[in-house]
Amino acid sequence: MQVVFNTQVKHVILTHLGDQLSQPKGTIVDFVVKYIKRLVPKYYLPQALSFRRVMQLGYRMQYVKPDISGEDLAFLQYTDGTTGSAKSAMLSHYNMLANVEQGRATYLPAMQLDKEIIVTALLLYHIFALIVNCLLFVKISGTNLLITNPRDVAATVKELARYSFTGITGINTLFNAWLHNEEFRKLDFSHLNVSIGGGMPVQKTVAEEWQQLTGKCLLEGYGLTECSPLVTVNPYNLSKYNCNIGLPMPSTEVKFIDNSGNEVPIGQPGEMLVRGPQVMKGY
Image (cartoon, rainbow, N blue to C red):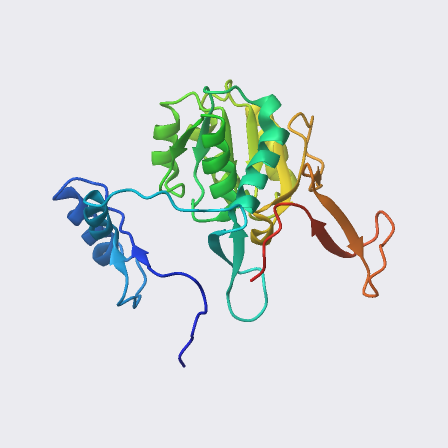
């Protein structure tokens, strides 16, 4: 079956883990990752350009600033939250910048400019880590501490012990694994300002144990790739875990409707509708 994609993408750039490493280290890393560890699935991209080749070509070219508006596409961000074949959410520059500003308005009172260090143990190609860890902390001049393999708890603990980290994000299974490691429990959490759980529901037992260990509430929210992704979050000064997804982000409207399109009373189940500047342009 041949699949035809109707997009404005002119070039596909293929990157490797060792692209930015010196030689021969970069080549060795790429070989180990692909053929020894087998972490790279098979792919067929005959027209793709290598990142190194693009950098070589670009070095000889004069930079011409592109004419980009807020409505132009920034990402074709794929999501598995829909039925049928995989779909990419069309996220504009305006969508992404709006969600960054919404996150900044929500969490800034709990942060110090130029002094934040957030533990990035989630994949940066996932929309949650991309916005919260990368773009939001770049906005406030923070530092990302990248944990490339968070499942290796021993290596993670060794790295975390070197820094006075102030923020951390993760998913429920990751927090649970950390909590069950004695060396992790010995880390210094005195500088921690914000702990955020995303990607899946946070279990109450995990959240309560996290707060008991760190002294900070594990904040939960709700988002989806189609909304760049933040829709609702719990306040940064929440005293304890409440099993809720929080309040709508600034400039965001949320309501719940039944199968007939009527708004349901508070406390009743319904389909969630979202309106705000972070909502995608379409699929």
